[in-house]
Image 1 (cartoon, rainbow, N blue to C red):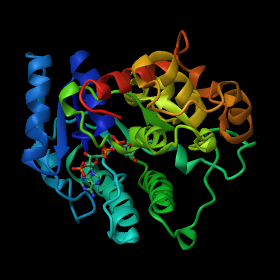
Image 2: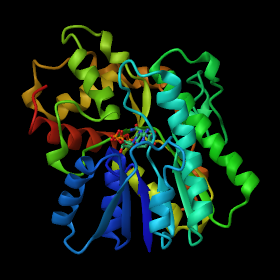
Image 3: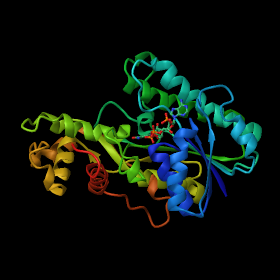
Image 4: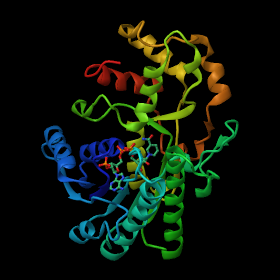
Length: 342
Ligand code: NDP
């Protein structure tokens, strides 16, 4: 079967493409420019010589009819995974145009293009986010029926703009589906902070992709003698390989095909990051903070969000075993430290 993956040059999307090619799917990706996607094609060609991967250029998902051409040219597409959405902020961009308009219009554009040109589509998977669900009070146990109460009026910085853009894009998609009643199944994946290595070592740069950068920033900005950074970040994480897997499961497991798939695994907070890195990378001794090893549990309990995703996991025959945070961070930093210094 042929899968269209939008934003396929992205961090998570490359893992989705990796898994799709490994399982024998044909993949059509969209990328903003030929320059950006050529290297992705080259890398996957080396990894999967028999793999079927091509790309189409979609420079701006929010532009009118952005996806019409690619679906017009590929009426054979069966599955659509819409992942493109602005996440990495470009300074001085206007918040509404950069985040909200691109995310909402990009989502509506793909759904409209499917309606017009892709009669064979049976499943659509939209990458939403944990931030569409998040609540302010960390003692609330998050479940997949919750919505972040954020409104656009409240937004005053890029983080809030991003959160609102994801929530309103998901809502726009759900409204479209409710009014158009298409024949395909529609699922969203709502991942927590996605951490883990790049598919290809060669894509690692000094500046990591934004979600890994949150973790790297805590490490790099910490005064190594201070305890302050130990409570930074408080979030929940999910490994990028698990995140990718959960984009494909709704295509393969009927019970997940129209779910809102909240995925989150272990809590992440500065002190846990220091503990994992100090335990695993002796060469970082004296270069990164140590904090107070034993305080991690209490900090997590007090500050990190919690979730109950048993209703999702119960739909997977045999359950699901997530990659541990320790493995995610070790794999990420092994790859990073092989190329860059902290
Ligand atoms: P990346 O920035 O690596 O991937 C995003 C992709 O979308 C890139 O290919 C990017 O192209 C493309 N894109 C963004 N905005 C536009 C636009 N306006 N027009 C055309 N293409 C665009 O980020 P991630 O891999 O982390 O994110 C992928 C998806 O996962 C997003 O929908 C994000 O919101 C969601 N997500 C991510 C989480 C995380 O922690 N990373 C957590 C939860 C959800 P280019 O790079 O060329 O701009």
